[in-house]
Image (cartoon, rainbow, N blue to C red; front, side, top):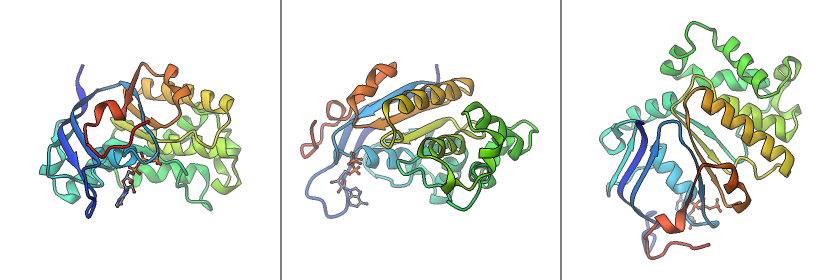
Length: 233
Ligand SMILES: Nc1ncnc2c1ncn2[C@@H]1O[C@H](COP(=O)(O)OP(=O)(O)OP(=O)(O)O)[C@@H](O)[C@H]1O
């Protein structure tokens, strides 16, 4: 099985902080793996995601994504790698409220040539419609402005935007915190099915312990992180 993400001797401190936030000897995520990353509020989960996504970098240690050492890439190269290979689902979804659901999804491929290429000749719009169908949005809902959709529907749009064009990695940062349990379980099932269909690795972050049974692998950040100032559950 090939490796999607690998961290080696990663150290990270925010500028001005008195101690390291993250000190992670090793972490490896295989291609297609579904992993839950759990940790207390403030323990550094979002920071770790931003390092894996190449939004922030650290000179200490190695963050490897699909065989690329992110520290060796220019900012432009990291941005391209992220656009092409990483789909991000945010806690607040970050949809453009007055654009239709469909237009929010198609945006994902506008600046990502590799993602467009993987649509294998289908138009971006046709591929987005099929993905939204699969995630349970009717064609009329797909035409509605995002702000007129329910929270659960907006979340599916955010998931479709992340999944379109089969990126290698989906990073989901607390994407279910606004949902009740039934909608949450339903969303996770749909997300798993979509990731499996396209062999996408899923790194799903939460502080909710009850989600662990859904995932084949759970990582507790406080067990992974050896930084002395790290927050514990
Ligand atoms: N841009 C930043 N600049 C400086 N410090 C930051 C920045 N972002 C986060 N921090 C600090 O890093 C620590 C970890 O924050 P982070 O958001 O990574 O935690 P988290 O585990 O995702 O928390 P939560 O579950 O509450 O979202 C906090 O002390 C926070 O104040």
